[in-house]
Length: 151
Image (cartoon, rainbow, N blue to C red; front, side):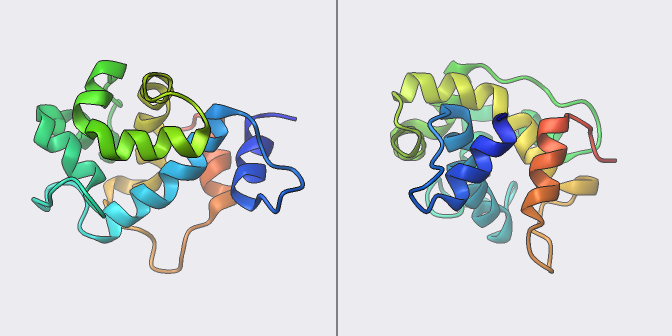
């Protein structure tokens, strides 16, 4: 039906209703990476880009204020595909592109549209931590796809 159904199909998979929507597949691949980054200390933790260091990779590329705008309660700053490529380098970007079945350049373009709101929805009330009770994926995706900024 829509992007929400595609994302849920990509996450639930099971081989039956697997999504072919690259954005849905990128979201499905990016959510666990971002949650791991947030649970590991997230932005500002001084981690190297690697397992749990996705947000730190953006800070290391001089995009810390951009990432902080996504985490905070204010307006999300935009990011270009080139900045996504610069921040993620080969490792994370290739991993996400492979998961979506697209080229790294295409992934960077989609991620430049997806990441600001995705990080925003993963950090409600400006908190750069994963919820203690677990992730309400339906609520996350509904909010993400609905475009309402949580304050």
